[in-house]
Every structure is written in C-alpha cells, then in structure tokens.
Amino acid sequence: MFDPTTLTGFHTWLSLIAIAAGFFVIPALLKGHMAPGWTGTFLSTAFATSATGFAFPFNGVLPSHIFGVVSLILIGLAGYGLYARMLEGAWRRIYAICVVIAHYLLCFVGVFQAFLKVPALKALAPTQSEPPFAIAQGLLFLVFAVLTWLCGRRFAAGPTVHA
Image: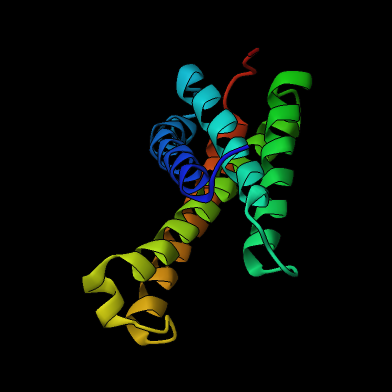
C-alpha cells in the first residue's frame, strides 16, 4: 500500500501528533478533567501509530513489536473505559493510567529515535548503551511514573464525565 519512505513518514507524523496531543490530555487529567478534542486526537493517533508499526517488514519479534502490542492494549482499555463504560467507577482510574502509560511508551520510543537520528545525541550515545541514553530514559520513566500515579489519583477523584 505504501512505499517504505511514505509509510515511515506517515507513521512518524502520527506519533508526533499523538505525543503532542498527550501533552494536552495529561494536564487535564491532573486537574481531574477531560480535554475532549485532544483526547480523541490522542487516542486515535496513538492507536494508528502502534497499528502502522506492524506494517513495516520484519523478521521475528522485536522490542518495538512488544511495545506496539502493549500500547494497543492500553489504548484499547482507555477507549473502552471512556466510550463503552463512560468512565464509571474504576474505569475512571483505569482510563487515566492507561492514557499516561501509552503516552510514556510513545515518548520512550521518541527518545530512542532521537538518539538514533539526531547527530548530537547519537554522538553522546552511539550504541544507546551509554550513560546519556540511560539517564534520558531514566528521567523520562521517573517523570511518567509520577504522572501516572498523580493522574490515577486525581482523575479518579473527579466527577463522572460522559464522553
């Protein structure tokens, strides 16, 4: 359907849009609210990013495939909680946690790709086993661990919102 260059560009743009939308969704969750337009954009582009990742040719299961499956499960649960369960009961917390973790996975891959493609970062960690890469990913993990906990608590305490 797509040549590899077109597929790569489409996949990359989807992921950048999903990452950007997530930066609007998470602050709303921290306040116990929804960001309806951004939420729909995030869920749809995050899902499409993970799904298009499986369109690339591959021989064997790679970590990117595992990330893709986990991401699709998280986005599926978030969508189910929002659209089918209307964020009732425990689905409020499940939704918030799934959204933040799905956003983390996108950002993790973004940092990974940045260290592969940005010359200055590649020079710091050419094999991605050097300390700068580990520090960047470690800090990203810590930030998202705190955000996941805070969003899970704060959004779960908010009022029921029907999508």
